Image (tube, rainbow, N blue to C red; front, side, top):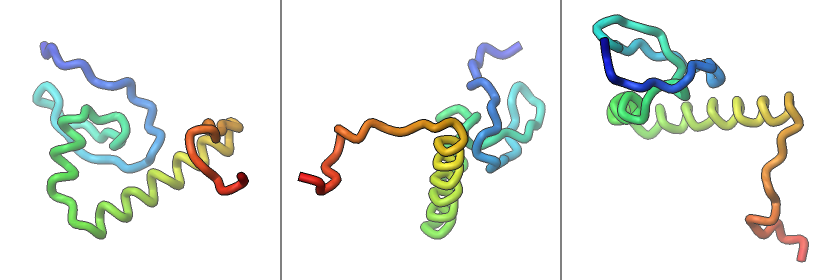
Length: 82
């Protein structure tokens, strides 16, 4: 048995990877991977692959915000309405 602690699987982003955990292969969403697993995957990405992933993650984040009416704090940046 492993002492590894894995994030709760939520399957939010829809970007799945095959990873080995405790000797078994699993299909896990990128956002559900450990930071180590994410770093291992991202190390092999070229610039275009990173752009595609960022666009998918941005689209997913927006969809979640739209679905649940979540809005970030606007007082953290200047929106030009001075």
